[in-house]
Length: 419
Image (cartoon, rainbow, N blue to C red; front, side):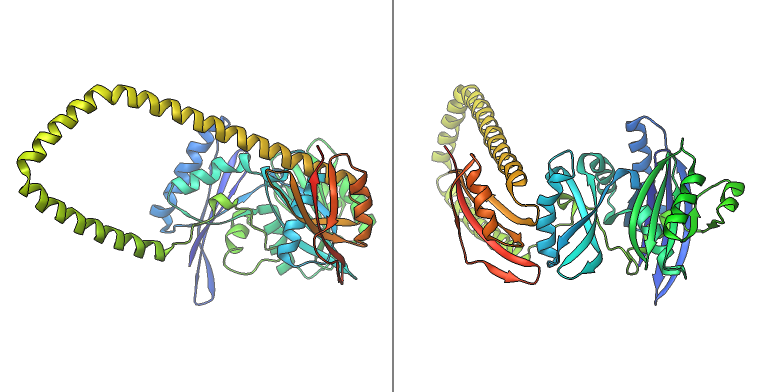
């Protein structure tokens, strides 16, 4: 399997092509491409680089790595849940942390610390609108997009795989900032971004004193400053780490491809139905051909009259179609905006009134104002009272028996919007 890893920064694009055969991993080539600052010119250069991968390196598989500054990161305490339930619960939980509605982001997570019925979860999220132009460039170039990664996280994963120390301070010098991760027992317990304008050596000294850990850095740094804090340079290729994430299991299995860019599964049943439909159409066509030649004269006369009617009514029909199209689009937009506003209003109210020791796993609001929510709480009975005090809800009741689990009580509640 041959994969191209591409790490994209503000002013440069780095490519590493790695091949894996019979369990042996080999680097076939790497290069760096400078990127112009205007957005349209940058995208054109990125697209040209993507298109060159097939011809130059004979690969159609690609993994894209984006900088840590493109992601918001949070460490959140959650109950122990299955991965599917955790993703659903985090979608609602992220409402508290993100400036825009959660559906505007793509996110992924890993559990970094478990204790009792709780777990600490590292969540990284990136805005879809800032990611989409690069993903569209890869798709338009005919490449098979395997994953979207954070290249700082993947470099950290490579460091964990190769380093002997389980407790360490890992730093990458990016173009506009220093990105720092603190590891304890090979698990990240702190992430920090430091501006280029600040004294990074003093920052590292403070972290080293607080966590009693060695310092390891990648990127170009001042040797005198690093020797002051006894830091060690580590040679890790960011684009290489991104490519390796698809060839072997990473310490952080995080993929940020938005659902709309995932490859669509082929439905062979639909092909079979289509073939049968085409066969039926062919039989119908040949039957019509025989009828046509039998009644050729009468058919010609009908066609002539039909063309005369079409020429008289075509203008009116076209205008009518345009008007109907405009009304349909307006109705769609009105319905979409009404439903979206209602969902956000209900979600915001639930985030405000629900106890802090409760988590939502799912929520539905239909057009009649009926609401159903499911989730987990330390004590499910404590949820009814705050919901009853809200002016937005009425007829609040449990939709199913409360189920006790290791992480708390699972509840299902239905209610209606107040008039």
